[in-house]
Length: 340
Image (tube, rainbow, N blue to C red; front, side, top):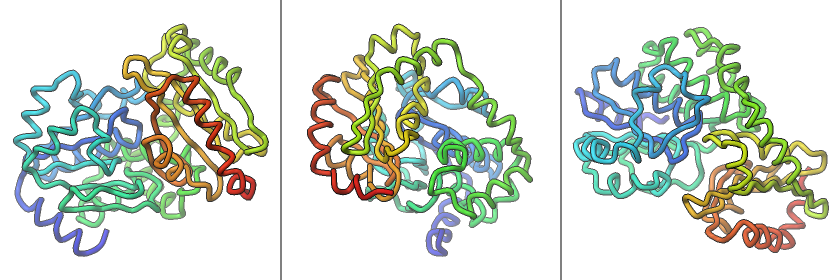
């Protein structure tokens, strides 16, 4: 974070403020961890923060310190809107376009607060008076650490805050194996462990919580996987019926797409998940090398994200979405065939 940005943040936080901290729709570990950590430190600094998420988050995150303090917008619309309307500052974390908040978008657009954006996704919208955007960062949680350090607030990082930040960095880096994991990332992780994050316990709380239903659903996903060797691609499908048959809970399909990407010779992997309630097909894209799934998702599926990890959606049926996806691949065959 540069000196001008730091100075602006110091000015905004010079006196106690009413602050709303917001994550994106379908919040993941990075969104939940970063929001909780920032709110915790802001409260210690004398501010009055409230974390609001557009909708609920996975059960495997419902052990994090302060998770019960999060207000879920779609279950508390009136109280959430009142907080947003009265906020003096709104911090938006782990997303860079207000439409990523779903039904919260209108309330945020009408807010009179000053916005502070902290995010590592590409092509941010211009809605914040402070924009701390860095696509080279592993995660928003890593950015929050640097944000606090720039404000000389890193001494306020307790064991609880360390746990929240460690969780977000760990989940967004695939346990520190994705390309955005740098030497600096590991230095931050070392500091968080020094501050009290118990890395082994955090890993167990996130990854060692499988249920028989989730493992059975994974089996269905793997059986449904299709490999397209001519495009060095693979995709997985899950219908609403398959989800229902296995008592699907939010977060159950987390990481499934990585099984397709782990195949030898595959550099582009996708999972298509039917959501009849929202009338969409939710899509997650992953890639290796320089093939940008961010650009692919933005161009074809109303999405975006990072070079090697992105999301999108389709309002067509599952079958029609798959046909459309396959029809696109020939135009990217040369790019995909040159990936190592």
